[in-house]
Amino acid sequence: MVRVVLPQHLRTLARVEGEVSLNVEPPVTQQSVLDALEARHPVLRGTIRDHVSCRRRPFIRFFACEQDLSHELADALLPQAVATGQEPLLIVGAMAGG
Amino acid sequence: MSAVRLLIGTKKGAFVLTSDGARKHWDVQGPHFGGWEIYHMNGSPTDPDRIYVSQTSSWFGQIIQRSDDGGKTWNPPGTKPEDLMGPDGMPKGESNMFLYDSSTETGKPLTTHQWYDGSQRPWEFKRVWHLEPSLTDPDTVYAGAEDAALFKSTDGGRTWKELAGLRAAKGQLWQPGAGGMCLHTIVLDRSRPERIFVAISAAGAFRSDDGGLSWRPVNRGLQSQYELPDPDAEVGHCVHRIASHPARPHTLFMQKHWDVLRSDDAGDSWREVSGNLPSDFGFPIAVHANEPETVYVVPIKSDSEHYPPDGKLRVYRSRTGGNEWEPLTKGLPQQNCYVNILRDAMAVDSLDPCGIYFGTTGGQVYGSADGGDSWTAVVRDLPAVYSVEVQTLGKT
Figure 1: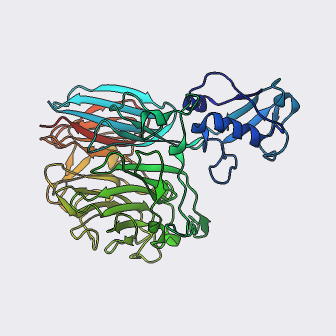
Figure 2 (figure 1 turned 90 degrees about the vertical axis):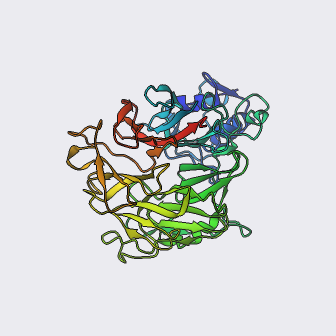
Figure 3 (figure 1 turned 45 degrees about the vertical axis):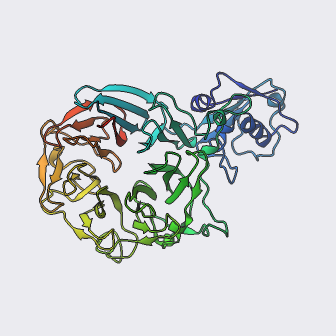
């Protein structure tokens, strides 16, 4: 199971508490995790990545294993610790005020 | 027994305020969607319990919310209650998809518009500024977007389709105002259902006479001396707000960047009616519900100084359809007041005497139950107010 931590606003929107656990078939990438997340919670479509381009929204960041993965390719493998559920993928609102 | 419901959109959430017809005591509910920017809330004229909300965030994008019980509960829209939830009980999210229509069948090519520096930039959806429910069908609603475009839903806000003919009205010459390139005003004509007016900053006013399929600019008479290389250009004017009285749909009042204007021929021509205003810069404009020639504006000092002249918050009223204006000050701060009143943040109820309400960037919502003669703070310490709409309920 892949564990995903959402920012508070998106937890409220998706009506979830705590982490989201997702079954993701390998390869475990940003794209496959987000596909699984949006399939489970369709209300999140458009909130993390653009509807059309599927690019990460500018004020969204992806962290895991104390690394910033925001600029990794969408189809790059996520760290093994994320793929195995040992560490969560953190979806974070960029620190730009608000 | 009549009642009034105020729908307040703020920088950090939505608020619903209710009062009986006396409009002296207000119940405040909210914040709904706390932490999100609420650009606009608006109720259906035919089903007042149906309220649409534009909930937006630079971080997480655009969400549309809907209430079918007068603001008690909210959901992303679905046509039937069971449509609101996916198979595993989670909310569906189709209603936040605003895609520009570039199809060969109904769309227009998604080209570019002017940027602040005069260069061209591609169209890109950012948020919904204004929601305007149909005058006859609670499931039909229009949405004004940034980058400027008009969208329509006929299924209660679940899905949206762009009325792309608008972008064909010289869209390449439109440019953003200070707040972005936004379609912020939608005026529907009760006497002529196929007629729609919209206003865009900074593009101008536009009219469709075929339900939104085709559009033409209606800006003749507007002068933008220091904003445009051609001051009376067909498009490019920074129109801040348009208002009309339902009984006189051919008469429109406009607060432009600078200048207050009126048209008596459905926008075909405009003439300035700024008259004795202390400043003709401002954002909102509203028409009295029972007196079609009574108009309200809130003068702001200048395009760079977005606060009232002399630190005095004054609503100005004209009972003559413009040109002759009187300041309304009773109950409003007359010293050290430096708030702004945004374009969607003033509205009237339809009781007699007419109530008028406006919200400020300082978080105050002021109301007058006597047509503007006197004012009280309905609520004083909200987040910055983006929009104010009024629903008059149970009027007999």
